[in-house]
Image (tube, rainbow over all chains, first blue to last red):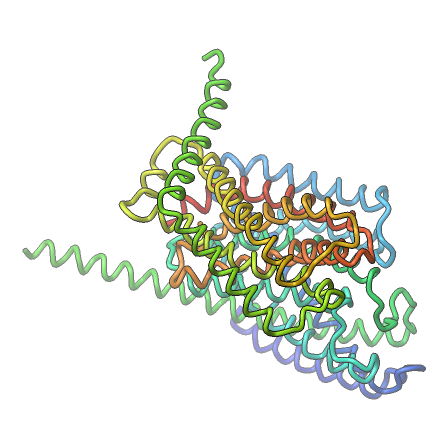
Length: 289
Length: 233
């Protein structure tokens, strides 16, 4: 394991360099936007990575809460499966607003039980909480990149820095706000059960996301706004580069999460050792009296 | 035991009612929350009235946001007192060890806050109308469901997050930091819905449905998770 980390780091660095080369040199210029659009190769992979990390955070939080009480544990398994199946079926049955593909909803729904069981198996007990902290922190970093590169891209293309009616930017901003409040709660909490409070907040945040999306979706239909290319298909060559870029970003995110996870594990071990040491010191002083 | 479920159900509601009655009586005697909320939102109204010229047409577009910002901040004042009040004399610890269901306590607190904030809104709305020369162009009765659903949306999550922020350093600051991000869809619903009715430009039905969905989703989530938060020390 110790040797795997530097090897992975080297692979990641090579991949990021290759992705940058592909994005700046190999990918063709956009017919309408020219060279400006190349920021997409950093903007979109960051967004996808951030969403994936927040998704893992959500499932880990749910699993953490469910595992905490044995009575819920059994039921939660079936609920996870039910959510996956019902979500996947509903995506094709219920008419969705334009711009949302049923397959995207179905995949997300099916990923919930898949991650639920995977995380529960490989990250038992407190490890789920460590995973939740890790993914939230790294997710916020990637989300910040999205929010910075978004306006930089919007300014030359739309002529404005920020469009309040733009569904993707605005819902990403709300998601970012929710996860920043999550990190603040973790930082400020005095409770010995911060993990549970944070997990509860993560569930609230995840429930909020679809509501945010729909509220902005409707808000947008009521307000004129710049024309934003959506639904159009992408040049296969560009898509290819985008996928290379996303792979590099995923490797990078995994690497950062790994070291952050390790750090948090060590931090807790040290904390526990300190607690045990002061306990035994108290015992010793009581014994000598 | 035959009928034990019925007994339990009855005691759930009687506990809820008892706690609610206690909170209302406390508030009736002290008037802490209502007075501070009223004065706070009055200040907001007065300060904002200096910042722009309330011509009828212009104010219609801004008033929706203004009213709800005032109520949102005022509600935080009341919400912060909900649980802090129970910390004195370890009342909250007594709740925790008592066999009373946690959700009965939560519901009582949420309904209590709902009543307080609704009273505030009933008293402040005429002032807003006077200060900003408001007159609804759209169907004004729809403001009532928006106000009721919006208030419940703020209060149910606010009560939950107030309990959560009890366990943090500087908890008074913590509540809005936790509450506002999650409340954004509800705030969009309230503000955009109110503006739609005041200006009469758009129908407000979608916002009512949005607020209703929000209320159902988050009331369920609060009831499902409150016990965890109450027991977390």
